[in-house]
Length: 171
Image (cartoon, rainbow, N blue to C red; front, side, top):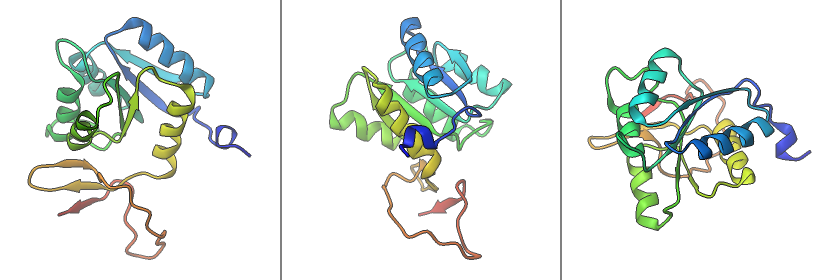
């Protein structure tokens, strides 16, 4: 059975944060095709923050370039603000700029996954599967808080000391 049919995304709630109405509509259609029924929208980081205070999504899709609050500022606020209602929410950063430095910067401010525009439905599906099947532990250092930036392929440990999906690792 393919991954597409193996995952039921119907219970996921997703917040799309993008200042382009057309892009929000395209992402909504893709998510609906994947079975997602709980979709909300914001046009910038400030509006998205208000949405988070009202209801916590399971996943955030966030554009990089927005005004007045851009994606990086919003992600930092979600991860670092003491009043953040959902510091551990998986965040997929969307951008048309995919040079290596930008990807590394996004990773360094706490995103979970990175997705290049124009977005392909197959790529969006793959990121959602990754989030559901392989939740990353969160790491706290003096200069970083967010999902572990390494792609760890560790054997699954099922004993008493097993880390939960939202457990933090201090480094």
